[in-house]
Amino acid sequence: MHMRDIYDAEQQIAKAFCEMIEQATEPQLKQGFEAHLDETKSHIKRMEQVVKMHGAKARGVDCPAIDGISISGGQGDFWPRNGRSGRI
Image (cartoon, rainbow, N blue to C red; front, side):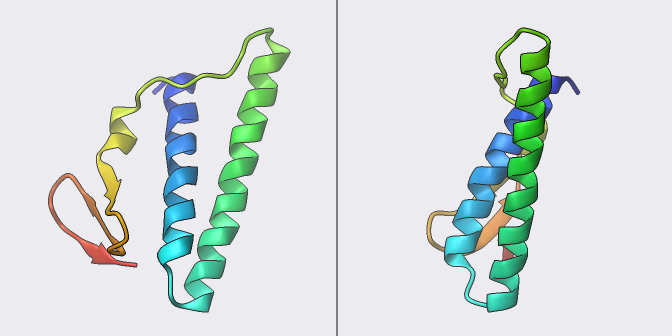
């Protein structure tokens, strides 16, 4: 896995956490997602800083590892490509 893969994965994970926060109905679960979103945003910022130190601009490439995870629109379900589902 390369830095661009990881950067893309972190970006996608941040978007997923935003959706899960909106869909979560349990306060503790929502807090947990918010905490993880903050951590993920910190990871993204650090990666951008490191890349900038090397005179480049952070950009991602499609990361197949994270592409296998989907969040359904408004249903509160999430599932990997294998078809198993769970509830948020």
